[in-house]
Image (cartoon, rainbow, N blue to C red):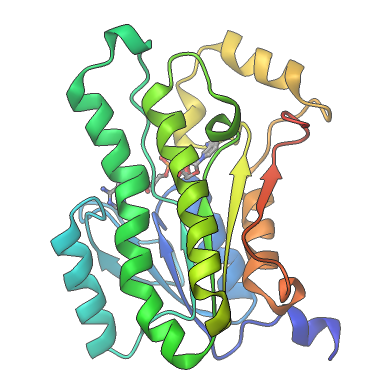
Amino acid sequence: MTLADLLSLRSRTALVVGGSGGIGAAVVARLSEAGARVVSVDRPELDPPPGAIAQACDVSDPQAVAALFERLRAERTEPDLLVHCAGIVRDRVLWKLSDEDWRAVLAVNLDSAFYVLRGALPAMRQRGGGSIVLVSSINGERGKVGQANYSASKAGMIGLARTAAREAGRFGVRVNVIAPGLVRTAMTAQLPASVVESALAESALGVACEPLDVANAALFLCSSLSARVTGQVLRVDGGQLIA
Ligand code: NAD
């Protein structure tokens, strides 16, 4: 097989959850460029990224996700590839964190990943193949001051992915995680300069990542280049966390 064949996603359908966000839109662009038909899922009020079929869904709502997969079945756009990039932050030091902010972050970041995996896996199992990528964070691995809810949700995604990799592997379905460090998107645009500076100081390369850095890793994990890679956490962080 040529390198171009290994990278090609032609005749594949990809579902990008959070496809209107900074990282999500870059993933939509990269997977489309590799030939996939891309369905972008995001909150109803947002514009879909160019080149994708749009599906509005609040992915923290299990009934809405079940209805989404009903529509995908009816429209014959059930995914061969799934990249989960939906996420929120509600930062607060642990002893000031409200129940509401704990639940909201867990619901959007972690519960939604469970709901979409549960929705996507039956068709992938039946077809005998698929690739799933969950976008976690290095802060799910190491913890971060002010991010108990976010870090717990991102750590949970790693356990979820590793379990799904074990359960679905025999059906030819691979499940991996990308753990980015600081990436320049709307999510990090409001961070105080001191937080960005300390992230850059931690980074071996001394640079912040761009959404396309994460999208390139997602393309690798979706493509046949990574045919024997499953249950892994791939850090895309410029060497912010080396352990
Ligand atoms: P972003 O805010 O640009 O994008 C997040 C997307 O998720 C948005 O389009 C938003 O509408 C969508 N979303 C939020 N709640 C939703 C819901 N209930 N239903 C459907 N969609 C919903 O942020 P981003 O930086 O692109 O982050 C993408 C992913 O990468 C997130 O999981 C984030 O935690 C992770 N991440 C980001 C960074 C970073 O530095 N930007 C670092 C590590 C991990």
